[in-house]
Structure formats: structure tokens, C-alpha cells
Length: 151
Image (tube, rainbow, N blue to C red):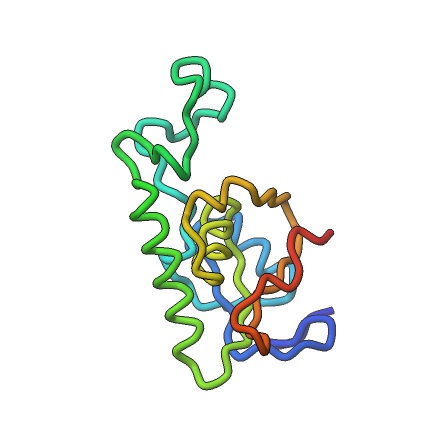
């Protein structure tokens, strides 16, 4: 059971959540009742695609891909990447940057590629399931994705 800013024996310097209820509720279920809310962790703005499944979008636009095309009336891939980078900057601006984030698949994939300074299109190749754990950390060779999509 998590207490305060500790989970599975790991102490966190900061705990963040998307403002969306499902992310805040997940944080609460994990034992973090008062995470710092940040719009940087908000899910991608799907614009006119909001509420549609990928399958529904592909019925009208078969070649659509979020990280290449963005969403009409919503975020572009560049905007999504810039927001992900702002979250990375927020986390790394602290002296110790051991942070826990509760968020959504598309923005978390963008954060992972921003963390390793890869292009936004790389996020297409990262599968991220619900309620999984991923670890981004500093290593002797720079920033790495140490664990991805672990149950």
C-alpha cells in the first residue's frame, strides 16, 4: 500500500496527474490522493476526432496516424511533442527528479520520446497498455527508457 509519496518502496519527489478524472482516480487508487495536477499530462486534443475510436477515424481517413497527422481542430504532432517536452522540463527542473505521473497513453508515449530526444513519430512504435508501469531515467549514457509497458 502506498503511503504519502512512497510506492513499492520507492520514494517520489513529486507526484503528478492529468486533470482528467480517470487519471486522478488512478492516482487515488494507487495511494496518492493529492497529486499535483498539470495540463502537461492532459490527453491529446483530438479536436473533431474527439470521442471517436481509431477504427472510426480510419473509416473516413484510412491512413490517419496521430503522431504524423495530428487531429483536425486539435493538436498537431509538434504541439503534442512540445507539451511533452514541457513536462520533461518540469520534472527535470527539480534537484532530484524522481517523479510519478498518472496520465494517458498518447501523451505518455510522447513524453517517452521527448525524454530520449527522439522524433515524435517514434511514439507510433511504442505500445502502451492501461495500468502499466514505465520507467524513464538518467543513465551513464544519458536519458533512457529503462522499463516500458510492464504489467
